[in-house]
Image 1 (cartoon, rainbow, N blue to C red):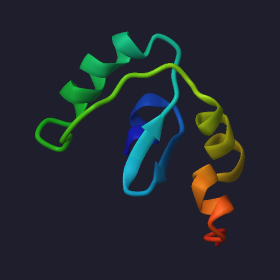
Image 2: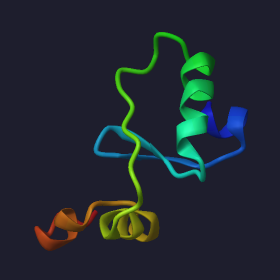
Image 3: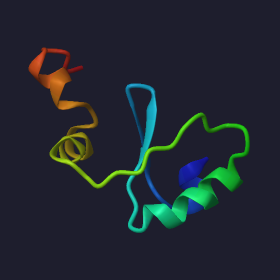
Image 4: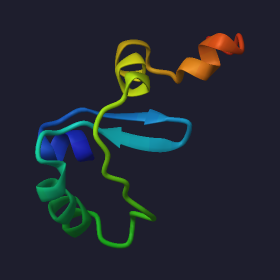
Length: 70
């Protein structure tokens, strides 16, 4: 639903929906308004090395290290 409404990709990693966008602080109110009552929490953060890994592989680095690569 997020991808269709906002023309952006959304990935689910460990039960969390991840969206990468420039100006995320401006996007949050739009997202909350578009999906009332469906969002439990939102975290805004700058990309980390882990984020780059998830973007490339679709899973967390610790999953790869622990042998949980599916």
